[in-house]
Length: 392
Image 1 (cartoon, helix red, strand yellow):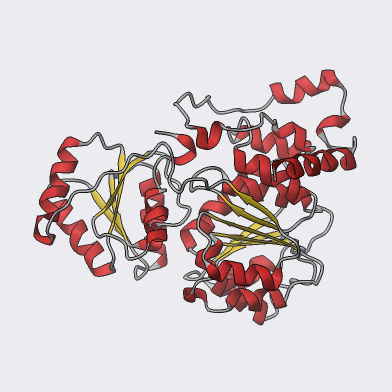
Image 2: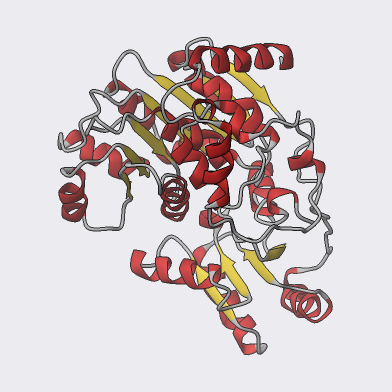
């Protein structure tokens, strides 16, 4: 698999040749100049595990990306591609469908957003790429990353999710929009109302594909694909791939290039422990953990919205700062909690499985399953909220 990957990557580099705006096109002197002018954030010197360091040693410049995109990548503090980025970016740029499995927190968002942004034609003012994710919080986070990566490019990125004003989204979509990040229900709504015209949308990305293809979103994605042009590229990314994904792949993907970086399921930087306790001992056990563990920020999972609220109340009564979030809350309230927790305004967040997918809060170093999840996949996604990008 690796040899095919390398040869395809080389073909991509050769096909592009030196062109206006690419890294290889300018004089070497100027080359040093543009990089020196970038506002690069301070280097992250924390130890990283082989989940993200075990690469072939490629540089972002080797993918022949537009200079403006490279500027966004470096200003985001991304120094070198992670293994999933190394494997996926050149293949995606070559136009192939991709089925990619990689652990939580190893750079999947970059692996698809970089080729998406690279392939947008900024002179065309219609929708060219659609990224679908299962939750509103993940949609906001993904759109933020795309906006930051594209800040030197003339690309209009729009996020649209349920729980927000549909009229506002209709107004925004009528302006120049080239990349849309959406949750399934809302984008289908906009398509069915013939507001979101997908006639020229050649790229579809499904992030957390297994969730999108689960019973929660019954058949929605088949409906989305019907609205796309016949000639299109589909990129599927997830950490877990149940049968539903394989069925979808057989129906809609054309000779997909498969990437599997999941020799083992959990991140190397995460250590797991369990406490065997009765239900009535759980809060006492949690209190002990709070007093013994070095917690920067923690996410605590419960299996129902009612238990989320009850536990958050209990933790507050124990004297600890605690937020909670679940799907039955008003969207504006959810956004506020998500934003404030990311900003570090509170140390502990109690949540339902709404928060298991893709959510990236750098300071989270402890994940607690207060209720044990019903599915093995859910457990994997929950604990993947910590140890992000190879950190311990």
